[in-house]
Amino acid sequence: MKNNKKMSLATKILLALMFGVVFGIVANMFFAKTLNDDLSKWILTPVGNIFLRSIKMLVVPLVLCSLICGTASMGDIKKLGRVGIKTIVYYTVTTAFAITLAMFFANILNPGLNTGINLLSVNENIKATQPPFIMDIFVNMVPVNPFKSLVEGNMLQIITFSILFGVAATMIGKSAEPVINIVKQINEVLLRIIGIVMEFAPVGVFALISKVVMSQGAAVLIPLLKYLGTVVLVLIIQAIFVYGTALKVLAKVNPFVFFKKFWTVMVVAFSTSSSNATIPVSLEVCEEKLGVSKSISSFTIPLGATINMDGTAVMQGVAAIFIAQLAGGDLTVHQMLLVVLTSTLASIGTAGVPGAGVIMLSMVLQQIGLPLEGVALVLSIDRLVDMVRTVVNVTGDAAATVIMASSENELDLAVYNDIKVAEVEVI
Ligand code: ASP
Image 1 (cartoon, rainbow, N blue to C red):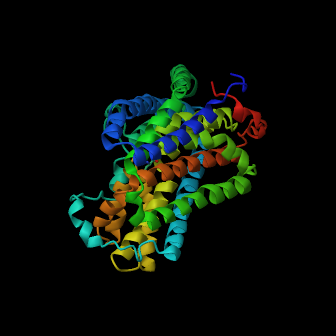
Image 2: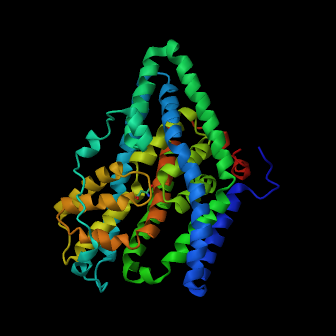
């Protein structure tokens, strides 16, 4: 543990984010395009990618090991079943709530009216994408070959296999302990590697953010500003009020402490746009700073990063109304209920990687008979929306983790309430 005399890693990451935004704006407005292209090609893209790849390299082994440890360390099948069901119910309910909130605000703010956009004119941009069939989400959860799932990084399949592995080890008991111990030790090593990689986070975050801001500029935003504004507003409400209230009411803890300690992870989510890439840091913060026991967090965080996407659901809810309005109509109550149902399923099936949510949007639109051209339209600013919704996706997972830990009496309140812990480096 390092002392807080030096600037903490969390502060460095936040500063890097701010410098990245400012630098990106300056470069976009004042630098020649060729200079920006060169900067991006020779420095920002490679540096950003090295950081992203170093985190991503840990995701598959970490999800496998931490879920096996998490499931096995529950100790008995009853507890596992209880926590599993509670977590999945909670994740589903908050997601459905998020979409409802999104549609409520979209219906009030009407982002699709008077935008000057003609939906039919974006026609040529859309490729004939075949929306996924809803039931395939469930079928594809079961791997045919778990090694193939690992190689391909198919998270839902890895989760199914790891949970089954952990459950079976628990059933065997004593004689399976050596295997579980090895997995635990590998897990420790992986967590240490994350500590090393995170030392480079400020540089990586700077590169990723300045590149996005530099290349997007403000022009792309204007026609879609109402859509962007509505999504961001609902995302903020979901993150601060919904999770804040859930933490206060269900876990009886101070939500400000949660946000104060968790924002480093939010910055990582914002700059990587990937729930998967955030798993390592999120695990670390939940265990070391928020006082959640390993057995809970190593189960709920990887699971949440894969199936719990409230931010993505918010985007889909607003986008459905937005596109319906652009197409010249409003959704009926029946269609809205269908959006709640399909978006909840779609967000479960959305991979925790950049841009995945907007692909699943095609499934939602198809279910309610809206034109798929809408996807092409929201795609133009999806890079920005993705950053914000990923923050909400991972915040929802961590809030749920604290709530589950508290309900199982596995939340160390002394650590949670110790503000000093927020200032101390994780490694
Ligand atoms: N980027 C999001 C995530 O990783 C998924 C999405 O595109 O909505 O959480």
